[in-house]
Image 1: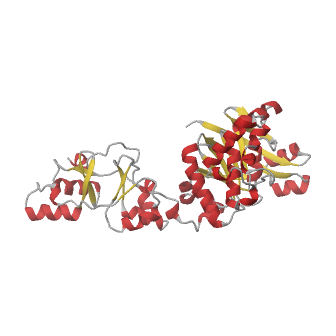
Image 2 (image 1 turned 120 degrees about the vertical axis):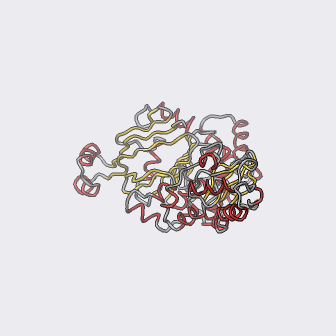
Image 3 (image 1 turned 180 degrees about the horizontal axis):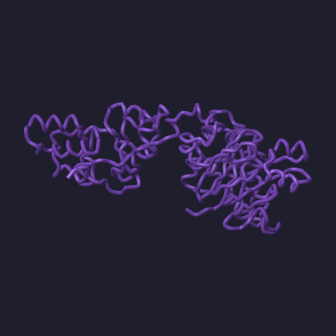
Amino acid sequence: MTVKLKVKEIYKIFGDRPKEALALLEAGNSKESILESTGQTIGVQGAEFEVEEGQIFVVMGLSGSGKSTLVRMLNGLIRPTSGQILIDGDDVANCTAAKLRDIRRKKIAMVFQHFALFPHRTIAENAAYGLKIKGVSAPERRKRALQALEQVGLSAWADSYPSDLSGGMQQRVGLARGLATEPEILLMDEPFGALDPLIRREMQDELLVLQKTLKKTIIFITHDLNEALLLGDKIAIMKDGRIVQVGTAQDIVSSPADDYVAAFVADIDRGRVFTAETVACEPAVMQLGSDTAGDAVKAMEDQNRNAVYVMDGEEIAGVVTYQQAAAADRDSGADDVPLAEVMVTDFPTTDPDTQLADLYGPASSGLPIAVTDADNKLVGVVEPEAVFAQLSAEPNASEDAEPALAATSPQPASAAAR
C-alpha cells in the first residue's frame, strides 16, 4: 500500500519559549516540571505514525491527550514546534504559506464535531461552501454539492434549511461539505461526539459503508475506544501528548503496550473486535473421489485434527470427523471405505470478516467452521476451541495456529499423511 501521510517526530509546545521547553523535554524532564519551571505547555511530543492510502486511521485519547492538537497540525491550522508532516512527500510542517494553501485546497478537508452550518443557507449551499471559498463556479458548486449530498443520503433535502434537519442529518451535511471538495485526505475531529448514542452508532455504520465506495484516506479523532475499535483500520492511542501504541484493533486488545492501554481494553467485548480471519488456521482437506476413511483417520492423527473437510475438486462436499472415520474404518475391517459414506454434508460456514460473537453458535456444533471467500472457495477453518479461547481472553490455543487466509488452494491432508 502507498503511504499517504507520514508523521515524523512531531512536537508542539505552547508558549513563548518553546525551544527552551523542547530542550528540557529532550533532556528527560516531565511535561509537568517544564510547565512549572517555564510556563510552557507540552501539547504533543514525539508523535510518529504512517497512514496508508484508503485507510481509516483513528487517533484515540481522553481530553487533554493531545489528539485535537495533533489533527490540527496535519492541515497546518497549528504549526508544529519541530518535526515533519509529509503528505505525498510535501512537508506541511515546514512548507511556505502558498504551498500550504495549495495542499489545503487540493488534498485536505476537515469535518468538525459541531456542524457549523449556516442557518440562513440551504443544505446544498452549506455543502457547497468549501467550493465557494475555492472559487468554483455556481453551477459546478451546485452539481458537486448535490453529488456529495447523494452520497450521504440527503439529496432530497438539498433546498431545505439546517433547522429542518435532525442532529444526525446535520452531521451528514458536514460530511457532505467535506466530500464535495473531493479531498484526498479527510480529517474528522470527533465528528459524532455531539450525537446521541443511537444516532452516533448509525453514523459510524454509515461511514463504514460509505468508505467501501469512496476509499478515502481518513484520520478520525475520538475519545471513545469502542468507536476507535469499530472504525479504525489502524489505531493510535494517545496519553499526555504521546502516542503510546499504534496497531490494529486486534493488536491493541490482545497485546496492550502498557497498563494504561490494558485498563482501556479490559472490558472490551472481544467478540466484536476479533473476526474469523484472526483465528483461522490452514484447512486440512481430503478429496472425495480418491481418499478414504482410512486416509482421513491417518491424516487427522498425523495433524492432530478432530475433523477434515472433504472436497469435490474445489467445492466443499462435506466434513468428516475422526470419530466417524475411525468407526467406519474399524467396523468395515478395511481401509477403503469411501468418504461419501461417512461425511456430514450439513456443516457451518462463514466469511473472513464475521465477528467472533457471531460464531459462538456455529462453534457449539463442535465442527470446524469453514471460512470461504467471495467465490465460495475454502480458504481456512476456525476450530471451535479457537473461538472459545479468544472470547474468554485466553487466546494461546489459537495463537499457535498457522494463519491460512493468504492461501489460495488448500493442501489435502492426505498429502501430508502419505
